[in-house]
Length: 252
Image 1 (cartoon, rainbow, N blue to C red):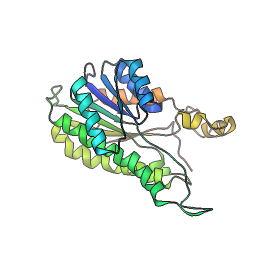
Image 2 (spheres, one colour):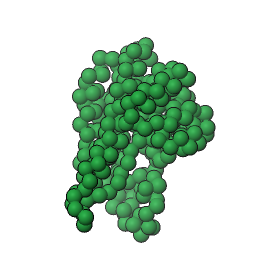
Image 3 (cartoon, rainbow, N blue to C red):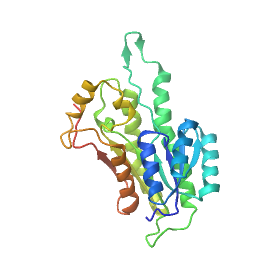
Image 4 (cartoon, rainbow, N blue to C red):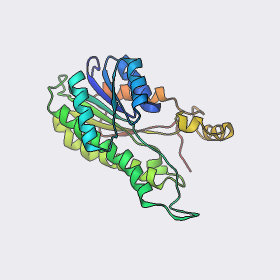
């Protein structure tokens, strides 16, 4: 898929993986909508790349529909959706004060899983109703963000791991459904990526974590996530897969 001139949406585009992805797509010629819960972050990245700021709660159906309509009016139909919006609070199922509050679990599922599906369904409808982009009949691509925690979740990650396992579980059936419309569906499962969540930890903790990555023995860079997004967009035979981006790390 040639990205030049295509409408693209990146959720969580105001920081971290999403911001790196928005920059990479814009550099490749896409017209990028930067969707983020933080209006300030969305505006800052959009202004940097010449994109469109789309403040939005990804799990709110009406808000997402309005944001998609705004992007469509400015950039044409969405052809590339990259779901990067997510949260990763750590909490034990049974802590010192008793069981985890049910709303804490629900919040993570709402943002990470329901939010990803919400944008996927809207973007897929736009793609399906658009003309093919090439001789393969390709109309668009959706890439969601999973995590190695989907299969190797750590203590305190019950909600986060469940939300990412849900991402993994929906990739194949949705890819099968949307194949007739020429829409590819993929996910990336990052390991330890140098986002603010990790970089704000004490240096000794960072050093210990990075030493557990076989090769290269360091945190991944957000730009490496963005590079994989571009590769997925350009290689039409990549479909219905969850691709790990973790330097061969396997969490104990």
